[in-house]
Length: 391
Ligand SMILES: Cc1cc2nc3c(=O)[nH]c(=O)nc-3n(C[C@H](O)[C@H](O)[C@H](O)COP(=O)(O)OP(=O)(O)OC[C@H]3O[C@@H](n4cnc5c(N)ncnc54)[C@H](O)[C@@H]3O)c2cc1C
Ligand SMILES: *[C@@H]1O[C@H](CO)[C@@H](O)[C@H](O)[C@H]1NC(C)=O
Ligand SMILES: *[C@@H]1O[C@H](CO)[C@@H](O)[C@H](O)[C@H]1NC(C)=O
Ligand SMILES: *[C@@H]1O[C@H](CO)[C@@H](O)[C@H](O)[C@H]1NC(C)=O
Ligand SMILES: *[C@@H]1O[C@H](CO)[C@@H](O)[C@H](O)[C@H]1NC(C)=O
Ligand SMILES: *[C@@H]1O[C@H](CO)[C@@H](O)[C@H](O)[C@H]1NC(C)=O
Ligand SMILES: *[C@@H]1O[C@H](CO)[C@@H](O)[C@H](O)[C@H]1NC(C)=O
Ligand SMILES: *[C@@H]1O[C@H](CO)[C@@H](O)[C@H](O)[C@H]1NC(C)=O
Ligand SMILES: *[C@@H]1O[C@H](CO)[C@@H](O)[C@H](O)[C@H]1NC(C)=O
Ligand SMILES: *[C@@H]1O[C@H](CO)[C@@H](O)[C@H](O)[C@H]1NC(C)=O
Ligand SMILES: *[C@@H]1O[C@H](CO)[C@@H](O)[C@H](O)[C@H]1NC(C)=O
Ligand SMILES: *[C@@H]1O[C@H](CO)[C@@H](O)[C@H](O)[C@H]1NC(C)=O
Image (cartoon, rainbow, N blue to C red; front, side, top):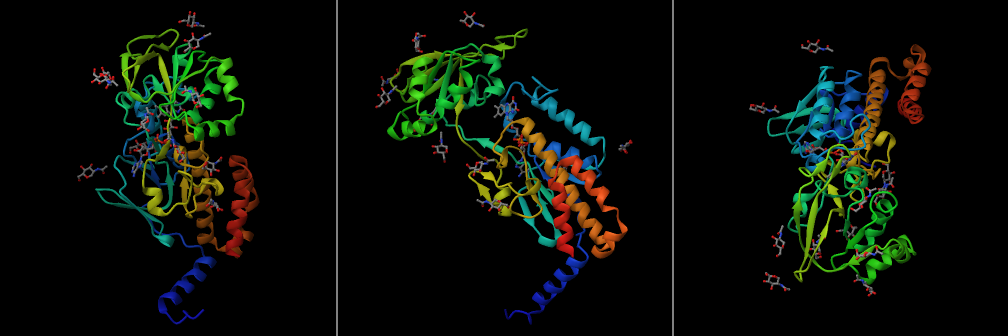
């Protein structure tokens, strides 16, 4: 390699050597930039606040569950309105006085390498050492008239979200035929016996082959449970009754009612629908940083939910754990926060003490032990790796 004469390269080599001996901690406005004020970002902010990390959390407020009436299956917060939940979380985080909330969209997110990261909003720029992306996903719903307006209000995508409120009602299954079987499997045993699939013209050889792949016996199941298929092209879904005003508060049943119209002008009545459509990244910030993807999700198979970009973590719906609910969002936010904190702590130790001295001066063993207890064995490996890099 013949680039050693270039002074820039020389500087870089010296810098790298120096930073390997005395790990470099860049001067930044904040320790961590968090993108997103949904449950994943808030949870990360909470965990970082409690160890007094300086955090700036950006939130453009387009929460995935903004259309829902109530949030369910979040223990301690069941049947709570999401804005109430988020406001309580913010208040709790604000108590620690170390998280700054900026309710603006980050339009540019840059990797400054050794100097950390820079987020830019219409108001200005903010730098930090690490980034936690809790930027969420969006539901790619068809523009069929009536569907988007009813999403989260009688038309829902997950049995845990609103299934209980619509139990024992006539239920339609929307989306491609190949996705219908999993809905039937989840709903039929306990929530809804009256199931009808609205496959909207997708009763094709390819779709049936996909179903066969998932479960060869699907036809038999449909027959046994009297799950019927209407394959007519859908024209629209018209609300007949609103469960927000027609409900039983004591049993929490919500009585929505819809008339689904087909292109041939025929129609049928259904109490509720389960909708199988895809999601995609809500934000282009992962792409701006060049985060590697697995399908439509950020590849977060790295330690502590780190992405393929060092120092950038992916949490919540947008990450490749592929679990999209509030408890997962919270648990992943917490996990990334713990790893980011410990990683920064390691960098600070190396800066302050230096690698060779550190081993002698510090009772590392007890430090490791505690971190391990807090978050599992992976932390131990992380410390080992950090130490190896410096030696
Ligand atoms: C209709 C519906 C009902 C649901 N009901 C339930 C339920 O009952 N129980 C349950 O557990 N789960 C439910 N979910 C799932 C739940 O909403 C998600 O799992 C959860 O919101 C994921 O949290 P998150 O933090 O990953 O993303 P989100 O809550 O979507 O938050 C992402 C945030 O990032 C912000 N953001 C993105 N890009 C930027 C940027 N560039 N700058 C600044 N901010 C940015 C967005 O504006 C948004 O505020 C439901 C989902 C839907 C669609
Ligand atoms: C946070 O700041 C406020 C206002 O300065 C102060 O009253 C409060 O005691 C601080 N809280 C903590 C936990 O330090
Ligand atoms: C952005 O700047 C405007 C104008 O200076 C100010 O009023 C507003 O509070 C700022 N917003 C944030 C989130 O900092
Ligand atoms: C029905 O299929 C058409 C044609 O593929 C598509 O444009 C539309 O979005 C689908 N509607 C629903 C409700 O799935
Ligand atoms: C759906 O189509 C029917 C029949 O054409 C019409 O009466 C109804 O208003 C339409 N609903 C929506 C939401 O477009
Ligand atoms: C289910 O609904 C049917 C018809 O509406 C009703 O007769 C039946 O009592 C309901 N069952 C339960 C368990 O609520
Ligand atoms: C089976 O479902 C169809 C259509 O939903 C309905 O008309 C029929 O009565 C059901 N049969 C039984 C035995 O429940
Ligand atoms: C779906 O397609 C199969 C194979 O062509 C056919 O036997 C079946 O009747 C169709 N069902 C519906 C509801 O269109
Ligand atoms: C459906 O109804 C509309 C309005 O009544 C009419 O214009 C249209 O021709 C009908 N379509 C079919 C396929 O019958
Ligand atoms: C969802 O994505 C898969 C994979 O890209 C695709 O095959 C399928 O058609 C999509 N489903 C819908 C309803 O668009
Ligand atoms: C999540 O989905 C992607 C794309 O299908 C896949 O590559 C990845 O392995 C999945 N993750 C898990 C934990 O199953
Ligand atoms: C996902 O990320 C891990 C760790 O960063 C990496 O080893 C792996 O190759 C990535 N997977 C893909 C399919 O890019």
